[in-house]
Length: 273
Image 1 (cartoon, rainbow, N blue to C red):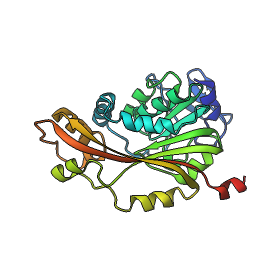
Image 2 (spheres, rainbow, N blue to C red):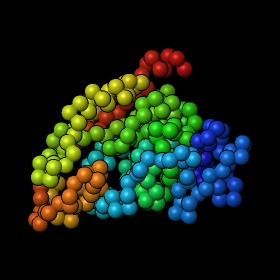
Image 3 (spheres, rainbow, N blue to C red):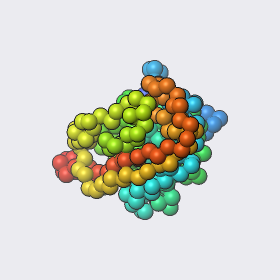
Image 4 (cartoon, rainbow, N blue to C red):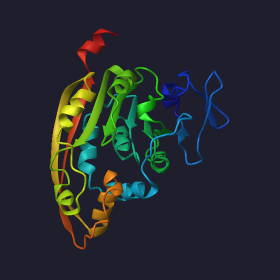
């Protein structure tokens, strides 16, 4: 395992440091965690973990992202990453697509892809030569040391503001991607997909009250999608659980609209450290 990543990981049971031993990670108190043959480390605890993305959802996401439709989003995310960063984590990393872009922007950095879905982690483990993949539940507490991260990414994923603040350095950077109201509006209207929460901005601010906004870009661009790509786009997210398979039979133009925002730990938090 990459040394920088191993030094940052913590036992999810007792929060002690971990070391490598015969293909597993162990802590001084004897808790042991296996590394799957697909390359990711399982740092979930004995409690039932949340349901993650299914194999079909992950395959749809991988196909859609590798086609380059969200390349502009990845480039914007990477633009908020300091080139001097040493350790970057992506919470809810999925296939590791955005983490790989961030690592390309920071040539000396190592990366950690954290997700609860095994199908996603199998791909994230191969997303970049300087990345490791870890199975963990963001709501149970991140298996990371205090103040170990230079950059934390959160792209269309759940947010735990208190944990994000704990694991970021005082001068660290949090980069969050959220959908704007017009995101995929054509598909939502045609197929009855889940709406973007109208109070998302307010809820985001409340979740990230430990942070100050330091920069943001709003991106809106058209996507010209084949029928298969429409099905992949619907099937790669939460709509896969709520909507029937789209009946698209021709190229469809869809609006993508997202906000990429960068945050720094709030001054009141820095003063207390």
